[in-house]
Length: 261
Image 1 (cartoon, rainbow, N blue to C red):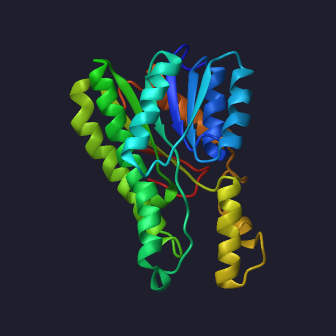
Image 2: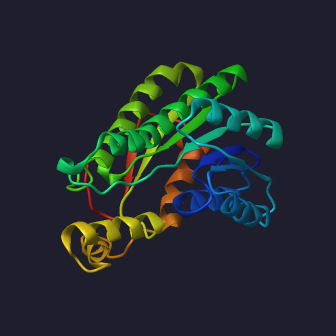
């Protein structure tokens, strides 16, 4: 068990499925009460039921993380519904497989509004709430191996994840004196719906058979298998716990051995 997570309250964006759901379930097993933000109300309710079966409290909030007022409202809802607010996990994001030559302004705005804006607003709103409550807090951001290496056909996606690393470092420096730590987690090839869509898009662009791109990337993993949401959640649980209290400003790779830093 991770130290100090029992009866804490964590808010997870993009928490209804995939990595977000994995994080929610892992923290729930540690005794953490969970709030989930997502756009899909049905999936939110399904994941909420799974969490509550682990004998902790859970609540949900439908919100667009690219909108600061909605993120702020979700945090206020979390505090009122669960009686506290200790951990903010800015997990939500989208992928975009597109050659640089083909990127349109609308494509650029959509992914940056969500992947950069969503993290920025989550950091800002969470820090303001921690400060208003006069308490320490943990802010944990979804980065990626693409935040350490730029990947072909994933140029703007990679740029958004490099931006998450920069925001994580800057926020860590700005909020350290308030007892707020800010860190990131950088997954690799995770077997979720997002990678199904990435693989499909690579197939459309390159002519590779469905599944071939995913297979190629997995074969490049030193530990010999694709990553699971549970693998990612193990690192996030550590970053959310008291065991990481002396770590801030870091975006830690958890990829089975793809990118080395």
